[in-house]
Image: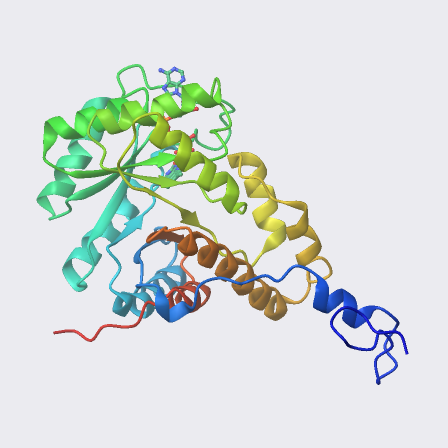
Length: 323
Ligand SMILES: Cc1cc2nc3c(=O)[nH]c(=O)nc-3n(C[C@H](O)[C@H](O)[C@H](O)COP(=O)(O)OP(=O)(O)OC[C@H]3O[C@@H](n4cnc5c(N)ncnc54)[C@H](O)[C@@H]3O)c2cc1C
């Protein structure tokens, strides 16, 4: 019988097609990612959105309570497009301060308000004990095609960062775009904008979500070359509703690789399997990033804790008991 270079028969005893074992045994060996236990648990942060109804409020709080024991570095609460959730964002953040051991970060945008009003909101946060702001330009409200700065407002996030610095010594995080902001003049201009936000006083960038880790790692290289040295924390979006996510990604400029379409194909009516697939996709993504030295992750929770909890667990996070 014909022998291959491994000394095994090319026609296996099971009658498998000729050459199968040879192909398996002589192909490149993938060493795999480092052992899970070998990596220290990363720092985590979680993003929530302010609820619109009582039912959603209950869902948010059950999400917060489930994730709280993982002791995230901070949790952030978004600000609706056009500043539409100002009161709800404030109420949610204030309740986090009052009722949990978590450190909240309030998102704040420039859209649709004069500087004096934005400053007032920031001062109210400081007085409520909030010390961390995620400073954003913001998206235009529904119905407005293009962003237009308020005539007396902060025009861009960089202006808001500088304004916050004048109000109080907030910790300030800003947004970054590994795949470039959709309306940026160029990739270099966008990176220069990030650098200016850091130079204005931001101490952390949190990225738009992405699915191709190589794009994020290349972005880190470019950021470092541009003189940015603060942490650029990857924003991770576990995807359980692929169809919805694809629509949203088209608007915010996040690329959806073809392989993801193939992965979720045929699961439109099967939420349970989609969730399992989503867990694998996100776990592979964060494991690859972790293997590349990334030790801080920001999760877009969409107020649903289970996938995030599982992925954080895989990364090594374990619940901490209150002291
Ligand atoms: C982590 C994260 C959290 C977010 N949270 C929210 C939220 O809570 N609420 C919300 O509404 N949106 C949120 N967004 C979306 C964000 O508001 C939008 O992506 C918005 O379009 C840009 O905001 P920015 O802070 O990045 O803006 P900026 O940093 O101001 O940049 C916006 C665009 O303008 C360009 N630009 C900057 N300065 C100039 C200039 N002088 N001339 C010309 N172009 C310029 C930049 O290159 C970029 O293309 C979030 C995004 C991220 C990544």
